[in-house]
Length: 314
Image (cartoon, rainbow, N blue to C red; front, side, top):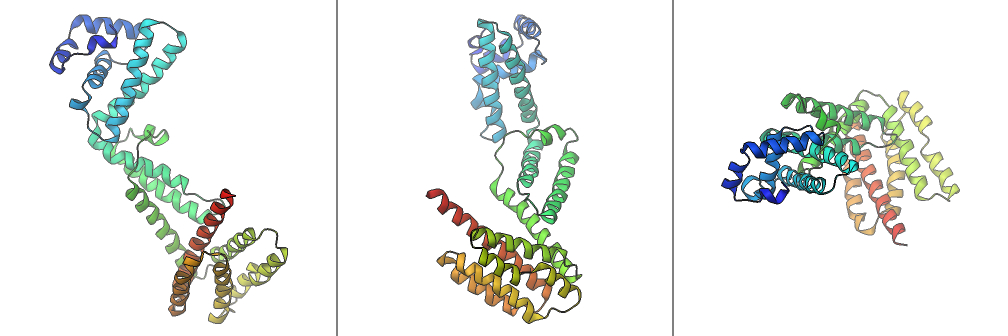
């Protein structure tokens, strides 16, 4: 029985799939080719293939299931016409993938909740940055929270966490979880300033200095100037000994902002001046440091992105 044998109207196919001879012949075929799947589930693939409109909607899960069903039936027909060992291996693989998606489809309501969470989990891993230990730790913390929620919904979902199906994630939901990470990261930094824990702040100065140097890689004279004005070790000593006042802090901020003014696109000038005026109104150091460093890194990232785009065009 090739796949065309099952190309029948819905009601007629329903009856055919209950036929003992059909079930027996299908079982023999599956056993002969070492396929580990129940006969009834395998026969259901033909129902899905020929009656997609009656059984499936336009959800990502349904679309992926149909794609896998189509692959399985193609390999099924190929095996029936010409036996090849490598085709059996392919058959085993596509059956496994199709069965996985079939089971997801059967539990669709639950997995409509789980799948976006699984992809958020993996999307967060993509947000990690080299040499950003605190940022990466916050991401790991949020990943664990998401993972615990997933497993609470379905204790057997670990397989999907380890090997996520390819499903489009809602862009808004993805951005929301990144925003949560972003806020938690900067809230933690703000608290460290309140507690006079200066390691992260000093680390930010070194990171900004490295970024600025990379923007002018061949200007060693400017590198020396940056080293002198952004000396993190001296800054750390002065902070730890309560020797930094508002004037000193603004001198460092203005030095960095002046570099941003030089590198940024002209259409960002107004935004930078408004941000600078906003910083001058802030009274609390913790809020001032949060708003300064948070926007500084955002602006430097934008500058790097624009310069890279220009470089790629050359």
